[in-house]
Image 1 (cartoon, protein in one colour):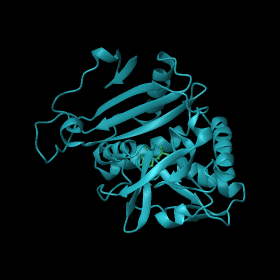
Image 2: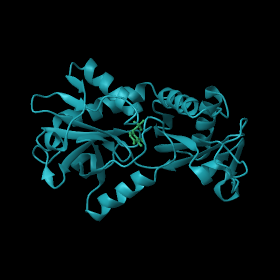
Image 3: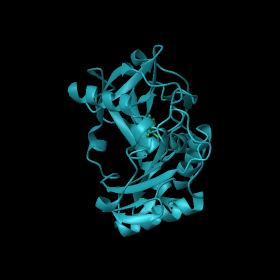
Image 4: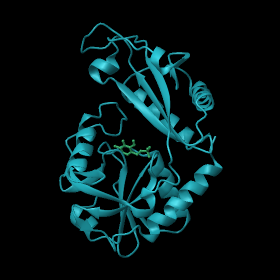
Length: 282
Ligand code: PLP
């Protein structure tokens, strides 16, 4: 596999990052994951814009222009012959002598790699996933997509230990989001409910697109908090992310949601999302 590191396309075994990189020492870095379908990038512009925002919130310089970033994504997809999968991008504040205070003029590191995966026809989309609820113990700026992912990793391990696929995190009695996705329910009246934007959740690029498509299709949408009890009693539940698109959730804390199979709203939104975002793929 060919990876990109600070201007070079290299075999992965030849790629190097300093031991003093602040991404490694302080999790002082941000990332993006963009999906590839039919060799093209899905929602690239949204991911590039969120990256710019994450960088600016952390006072970190962008290593290259967003146009250059698109070219690097395309070049890597081409070199690795990725028909379907993901492009992972990470920007860190780069190498500096270890000090909590960061340098005024850092030299950021930029790393990209690809992963080939079956996404559109992932078999699990037909059966749905099971989740448990766990306490949300992350920091207070979840709107910034930092590489500080230890708690979400622990959440995934708690889910695995419980024999399920993922965990929904709960704070002050309300669901924030999944370990690596946004969380939704569909009420018995047919309203799609997902938490409102704020510092408590990542502003999902897939979330923005799915809510737009839902409204265009005249579906009712409410952006507000919901509880685990409301979710257990919902007609449907699902998650969204760049790597899962729209994925039905059929069980929560051992309780079946709806009839325990993917619901019509989640199924329809998955179809619309795949169809519409492919049209705009670059
Ligand atoms: N929430 C969290 C915590 C995430 O890590 C992710 C994606 O990685 C998402 C939501 C979904 O965001 P997106 O749709 O931009 O992939």
